[in-house]
Amino acid sequence: MKHIATAKHRSNFKPLASSANVQAAIMVLKPGQSSSDSAENEHPRAEQWVFVVSGGGRAKIESRTVRLKTGFAAAD
Image (cartoon, rainbow, N blue to C red; front, side, top):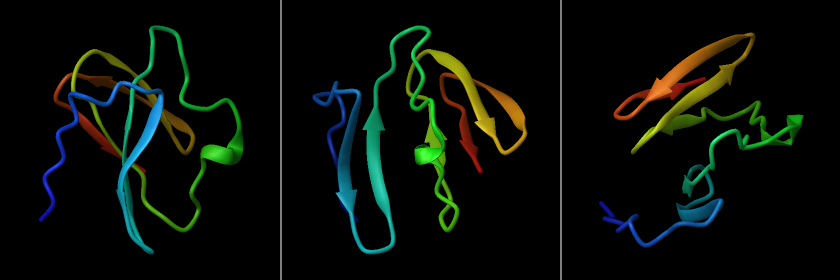
């Protein structure tokens, strides 16, 4: 198991660990900002998980929108 100190990472998107089959990344979004405005953010052959450390927002999962808040996780 690899432990990663995430508090020092504050960029919009930063991969923290990866292998041929998985990637863990941290993403910091400002109010009103989206992680992506295009289909480029879709991963048809992989699951994508979101865990909210602080704040809140919405995640679009397929055709539905899910509300997120601190401590919540969502998966597609």
